[in-house]
Image 1 (tube, helix red, strand yellow):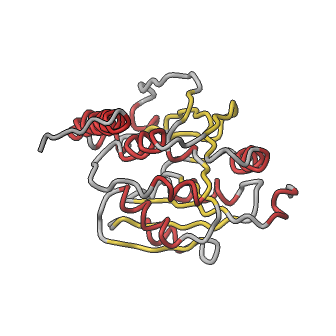
Image 2: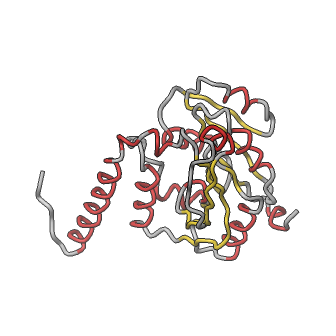
Length: 244
């Protein structure tokens, strides 16, 4: 066990789930295999109608399970945050898996750099084995490792997270882009690890595929960020925007 574990810095891991019975066990097990301890795992069920609840409860007492009516992923993550006890927050989507040293590597960075708020890492995508069988092996994805500025790669200090605020629950997609833009505007300092910390599963029910019709949210989020920056510049120059 790493000496970091002796510091007693609890990491709360929030796993939002909505009808993900196929993959939830893999996600939870990847957290339980982490080199870093101590951790708490909070699974928030966003109104699933499949066996997700049963699977999450099967990990009791290692997992805290809570449920709510279907509200969307941002509200689900926010629910998990609201009941988490840790000094650090991490997030994992219910269909993805972490590499075993993910939290350890990131905690080492935060311990060595007290001025750093959050640590991200790289992502490798993989096609879910069940999806390969169903498609006859015809799916193709990029093999390049990608920089992962997404919730499932992030480890963040609790106080840093609350300096930015909860995830915006008005968005159907892009809620993390909205949060990250607000974080950059407020000076969040982050580091990107060279190592792969997340294996992202590609399958038919990925949120980005299910909610293609809501992609205009990305444009709206970007516009709001640009508006905030313009208003900040005008305020700094003593200019008032009188538009209603």
